[in-house]
Amino acid sequence: MQLAVVSPPLKKGGEKSTMAEREIEVIHLWCTRRSASTTLMYSFAQRDDTEVLDEPLYANYLRVTGAQRPYREELLSKMESDGDKVVKDIIFGPGQKKYRFCKHMATQRLHGLPDDLMERGKHCILIRIPSPYWHVLHVSQTSYDKETPPSLSDLGYDSLVSIFSDLHSRGNTPYVIDSDLLREDPKATLRGLCDDLGIPFQDEMVKWESGPKPFEGVWRPLLFLQAFPSSLYELLEQSMPFYDFLKRYVRMNTTKALNPKLPVFANAKLLAWVGDEIVPRESAKVSVFDSVVQGGDAVWEGLRIYNGKVFKLEEHLDRLFDSAKALAFNNLPTREYVKEAIFKTLIRNGMFHNAHIRLTLTRGKKVTSGMSPAFNLYGCTLIVLAEWKPPVYDNESGITLVTATTRRNSPNNLDSKIHHNNLLNNILAKIEGNNSYADDAIMLDKDGYVSETNATNIFLVKKGCVATPHADYCLPGITRATVMELVVKQNLVLRERRISLSEFHTADEVFTTGSMGELSPVIKIDGRTVGDGGVGPITKRLQYAYKKLTEELGVHIPTYQQL
Image 1 (cartoon, one colour):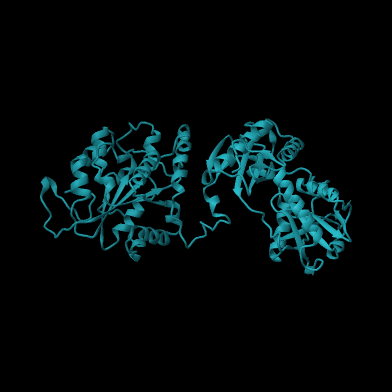
Image 2: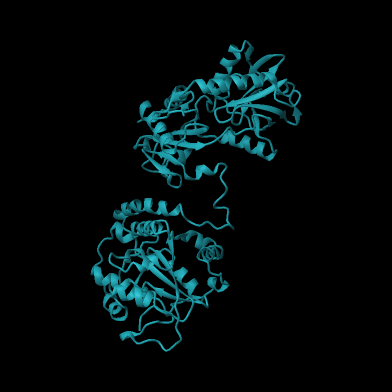
């Protein structure tokens, strides 16, 4: 009798079962080893309307490829090894129940199998992140020691991507399930899969008794975990791009906050520059040994894109390289290389207006974890994160601020003129702002004078005079410097001096400046209304002048043509 069928539809020699049979709807699961596929098979076996097949194509795979397994002869004697017959008579043969769940290893889909295998039934793909944890060598504890080292194809992720692409091209895009979600929230994951397949969920799918099952393949008792050789780690790295591709199509559980709504939906499919290549959003990662992970050891810039131009690009690059020099970075990329990465990222994303770039340069990857820059032997890591991002503040109606108890770093401790990624000082102040339901928080210096906000520079207007704090404790922002130039060009009086908090409370106008938010009017500070509570005339005047400047200045993005 055909092995691995709960209610076997075909006996040896073609003798039909005496039980009433009918046409059955097939559900195909494509997977790799140790991906929790057996768990998923157990779940479907618990249904009262489903029979299951455990790797019905395995014998055909062994016959065609000649692959050696300790159970090879037993399996070939008990399972049908003719692929055409397996597909026609076993996978799509009649059955006693409404559904047939077929668990397939992706590597077992060989060339020459009937087209019905892909054309008929409903398909889903189960993935698990490639790691030494799940790798299984086909070995027997007692009698088999001839295992050859696995190849990339043996791990199966390239086959999974091939199956996904084939089904997608046929208009039958498979559902993708992540085994991590299945483990963390099995009921929600199974319910979601049933919804996708158009079948009712049954509570029995999350309940079964432990121990072997009669429908499992003969190979099951002969598999055991063996340590993954360190010499083969490269195979896992080679599998990651295939995993990352499929992960983009995973169905997330609505009961878990794993798929939050993005502020700008178009950013879901963005491409980012990481290291020396452009990768999809879900693949945009740095090593756990990178200095930005180990200690926030990196420098960064925020750039805005207007009408096919990068505004103040040269000024931002000046500060980026000055900050890297101040932190004694070695093996920096050239200025032209950074520009090229910026332009390529923008062009690939089609971002030529109303976009923002978070440009980061880390000290690079370390050879081992630790604080010392002596461990950084790979060179710097460049990250170009471009997003569709309008100004982040309400620049028409205004924003509110509160004063944080967290003081701005002193140059005695960490000079704010270095535009570094260690932003905990600012983040603590931002938390205070969030807790007070304010847009941002004002930060004071050690003597109690206003320095800046947690994210921007700050200005006030009093009796027609514009004033801003010295850049002793704050970052001398590029937008700040641009606005100071505009104040002079507008024939307004400009003062750079120490400013107390009460002066901001009693100012006629207050506004903040920064690349991400541009010029943002402040209408309330610590519960006190600024001026008449609206956007002041000088603020409006400077906003207009700044807008005109962004239309006129900037470094052109190659290939961009304004229509």
